[in-house]
Length: 303
Image (cartoon, rainbow, N blue to C red):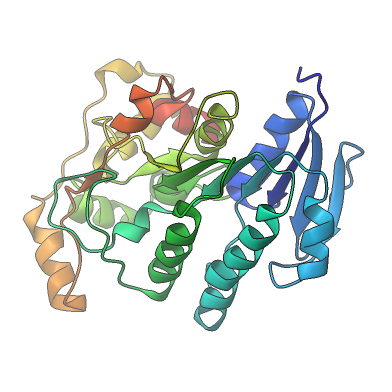
């Protein structure tokens, strides 16, 4: 338990990662404030603030006498709102943080900020070339956070394809196991799925609180180093775990060569990374972080 009763604030607290961070904070004894546009938290451990990143008065009250801030809120669907929410909202939040008691800020970015790349292994030194409105807005917001604030510990996380029980992502394919799902795995089976459980992202967000972070640090959060983190590998792993078979001997199901889905995407969309692009968590792991779930644990959690 954390016995100092520090105040921890979470934007996007009802989202996949935000909700997991809230649970971790509760388990460690923090006083929690949750900012959400719609969902209400019926929990005595959580002080609820209804509002958005555009509500400056709400944000000031939200951060008053706070110590930790986990900024997870983002607009994912409405392109017309992405810049206002993801960039201007973050800028507004940072302005308030500068005049607050917040000492630790974790910003949830996205691996998608890298955009198009020819690198087989992407790390924090890879040039970012975001392509769509969401990627561009997250990259612009990330650069604002990366400027830093004197006296604050600032960590930027770039998770890959985050899943949880309500949003199984690529695991929906073996869960449904329709002929269309089988065809998709046959076509894309060799491609990296970039699967990552929200619990592992939440753990990474909490990891740096007691550690020294003198300047803003950026980390990919990814399990792409695990060989079964492909469409075909996850299909086989899911079926093995579902049938209580040993996971250690799992082999990916039959699939077409990587070049075929890549060429198909180029013909249909004109753009797209190769399916063997992977995002490296080497920097995060070198800091001592360990994935509690990883790929196998993520699949078990979904089942």
